Amino acid sequence: MIMAIGGKGKFALSSRLDLGFSVGSAAMQRIMFSALMAVAVVIMQAQAAGLPRKHMIASSHPLATEAGAQVLKRGGSALDAAIAAQLVMGLVEPQSSGIGGGAFLLHWDAKVKKVESYDGRETAPLAAGPDLFLGPDGKPMPFMMTVVGGKSVGVPGVMAMLEMAHREHGALPWASLFAPAIALAENGFPVSERLAAAIAADPAIAMIPETAAYFRPNGVALKAGDIVVNKAYAQSLIALRDQGAKALVEGPLAQAIIETVRTAPLNPGGMTLGDLASYRPIKREPVCGTYRKHRICSMGLPSSGAVTMLQTLAFLERHRLAVLPPGGAQEVHLYGEASRLAYADRDAYLGDPEAMTVAVKDMLAPGYLTARGALIRRDQALPEVQPGAPGAVPARKRAMLDYSRPSTAHVSVKDAAGNAVALTTTVEGLFGSHLMAGGFILNNQLTDFSFSPVRDGLPHPNAPGPQKRPLSAMSPSLVFAPNGSLKAIVGSPGGWRIITYVTRTIMGLIDWRMDAKSAVALIHVTGRNKTLEVEAGRAEPALIEALTAKGHTVKSQEMMSGLNIIRLAPEGLDGAADPRREGSVWGE
Image 1 (cartoon, one colour):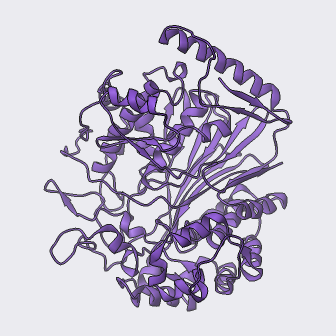
Image 2: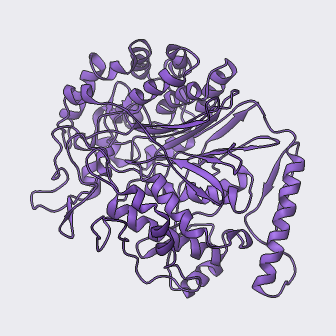
Image 3: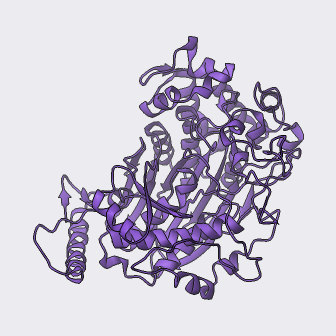
């Protein structure tokens, strides 16, 4: 066990087990691990006196964190701070999120003790049918041929959703939340290393003249440290500040969006002003469940986050993970099998609840979860995983996989009144559709639909359709302790793997009682279909060999998460930003 204590209130616990002496049997190793973990928790609590206690924000970019911090210092609510951070993120990391995309948000009202969820997912235009991504031969088009251009753009939903949430939970005036982002857009911001790398690695930027002019001025890609001014984005923010989300529905900005989509040099789309006007954010019931006496709430459909995460955790609850070293072969095996089972159900059955009936209650029914979890063997991987047959849902022979790209961003906020926000926001892939209007990127969210509308003779639940919302993996989550108090605010970007990133972080907090930094740094593992993915650079050869011996097909895979979490402890607020990206944390 490696424990590092340095500076006032700082504590880090490594996820690697290094006892330094022989302890004999595996049972003895588990006993020693449990004992050392208990000691680590005591030390962590004793050293945490310097943690912030009032409010905190963790976001995907330091400038966004600073914008949220300014709002919190002025007495703003958690929701206010999240909005200010989102507006900055759309400027400084446009490859990941922005006002041309969508989002899901969970809100905890500390006064009335209530969790609410808000759906700002993009919708398909009325012109979008089941054959949206089928070629002339009736077969699905290659994924990358559909991304760039207007056909992949969904009706943006993030600003309408944030406006709805602000009416209910804002403390400061709407207009006051735009000042940080407008100032950065007008005066300039420095290009980060991550943005510069994304620009350099994306040849599709050059295919869209307006986008190329912004990210590759005079044919030269922006470099880290370059100062960029975006007057068009500032004007869009001013319109949204003064008119609210209506500015994206009518007027010059709305017209610019439609013109950009319909006249795109590649894959022009059929979106209309009527599509923009018909968009409505939806306030939904969060989906909650329990894991080791903790209550976990996340986003329901069209996000698959809650269902898939709660299934995975339910399959694991019968196993004593606390005595297993996190990231060890046995723990990774069990997690991988649970993940495979949950993803098989996700890929086969989940879709937009407004367009179809989804048996969420059946998929989370205790009897079904117990029977399905019993398929997991401790010593051997399942040779193949098929979807289950929950309730009256017609059984499917196999799942239809989606492979959404790992972009997106996440913000976690806790304010002085005890309210909390978990906001996951996206334009889908890196640089979305690569189209720009009003100084911001337009999403390619429609590629989150299944390209094949029928599988095994049955309509696919995530097939494209007019005004449908594509299935998502975004998983903004709130964790509550057994006594009902808020314990953690968690979320991450990362495409379809988001669910596993968030799930394993929650396991770190609950099973191994880790601090925020250690939970975020856990090795990533994803089980889906026949493959068990382990995080490249983190999985040692001995781990891969042990998993292979259990029958797994193991793939070492780079997994670019961006976890931003806040853990509420008796000693104060413990926040962490994912070391794999450039996020930051502020609190006082």
